[in-house]
Image (cartoon, one colour):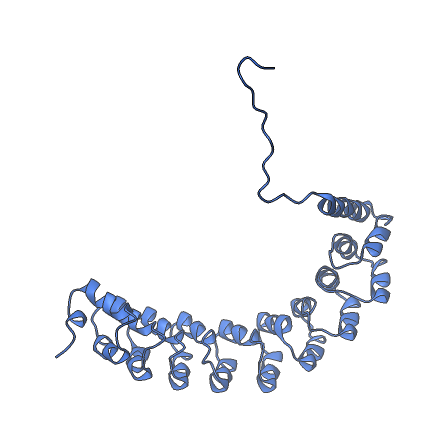
Length: 281
């Protein structure tokens, strides 16, 4: 005979599904519940048995399948099914599941869904063979996301030759680039790449000296207001031939000095308030 809470009214069944004291095996009674809210509550439970989640993988309601896709208790086999789901939100939820293993990632790399491939590109421990596929992805957005997040120096070296500016801009904010790779970016043909680089990453003295005379005003203005550019370089830009660059450098120096001299608030301190007494001066 089933648990009375599993067969009661809707509120009781939802409460039963969400109650952490409900034994995992009792959840089997709820996977075929007529209410989406009840089935979704079961699908989201991290202690749900994999066997209880299996029928919910093919649930007719997207919110239930999405909950299963994000549940760390979901088996790799079921994640493989869900990563090919007809609904994009279900597929994207798989990418954030800690159980998203090598087999699931390999399927993501070949998916038609551009966003799914982009989510894969952002994974830090991406297998070299999958990164090699994404390097040649038809979508510049996917390649840019790979450029921003990859830890693989060979992947970075390959993407340095990418013809799309937005991809190389992605590399220009990647903190894992080597000094030599940053040197290459400092000489990039696109001023957008160079401007992004000087705002985001520390560069060697020789590169900074060359960029002081960059032909692009926007690159020099980016240097003048960048917190990663050393102060002595920014001070030289105060004498730049372009007044907008010089003004930016002076203004940035002034704001930085104001921040440095501003007194820190005294915790718990209250200003004394004069007390006046009737009849006294």
